[in-house]
Amino acid sequence: MTRLHRRFKAVGPAFLVCLAMLSASPVETAKPFEAWTAPVNLGEDVNSAFNDFLPELSSNGLSLYFASNRPGPFGGEDLWVSRRASRDARWGTPVNLGTLVNTSFNERSPALSRDGHLLFFASDRPGGAGSLDIWVSWRAHTHDDFAWQPAVNLGTGVNGAAGDFGPSYFENDEIGIPNLFFASSRPGGVGGVDIYRSELLPSGSFGPASSIPVLNAPENDFRPTIRPDGLELIFDSSRPGPPDVSGLGLRDLWVSARSSVSAPWSTPENLGSVVNGAFNDMLAALSSDGEMLVFTSDRPEGFGGNDLYITTRSGR
Image 1 (cartoon, rainbow, N blue to C red):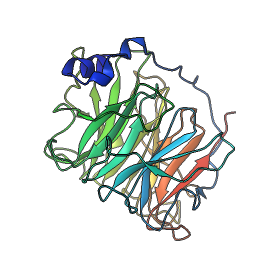
Image 2 (cartoon, rainbow, N blue to C red):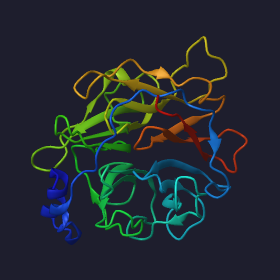
Image 3 (cartoon, one colour):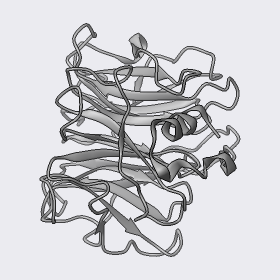
Image 4 (cartoon, rainbow, N blue to C red):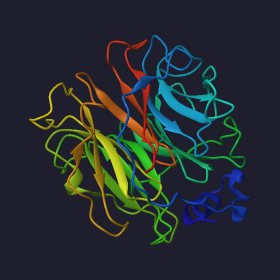
């Protein structure tokens, strides 16, 4: 049982009583990769005439979570899931996650824990500290995408009076300290929106968040997604692209790496014109094996205002 699991059990939700049996799934061994391929729209099976954005892939690659403002039974933005039978199969029709996750307010930024028992997301529902707070829900059965229990607010270590969103939960096997990476518009950062990190404390709550200066710019930096081995982090930014690369957009995807989980992050590099286009390419999620990157873009060949795209790479 992780400290986060124990904390949820202590605060009272009955759905946490079985967590003593849980253990994290294994992490892929670090390996080099080939270059990213040209992005492909996920198609009308997933995308709609509305805004579809902020994707997240399950560890087995068979469930795709995302936020959308398509018509639904709840708020303006809800969390939806599309499923497929295998990695070679087509995605199924997206289904709303239902009343235990979605409310009449906005839910966005889904992020799954590696073991699949935890779903982090951002919401402006009542009970939070700011305009958007980060919440977490739990499920017992990791292959049941509709078994999520009522969410718990992550508290003041992560959430504040400003907007806190775009979580990415990293379970650190090497050091043993789980980290939550996220974006925030809180004052005191380098730009309007910066990337922060909060450690899970022995008490089971998250400690005070600190910014990661090397990742942040005077512009806005959004939605970090970290590879399960902790050695690569991708985010999107409105900072200027490299002067020698033409055709980049208002928001591009950037990457930072490190040699170990205790090493500093490298200076971010733009993913380049194969992935980034002349429009907004943003709000991405890495797959558990690091070979797929699903992201949001408003490029004009899509079906709606924002669509989901995928780029892939293979290990060497």
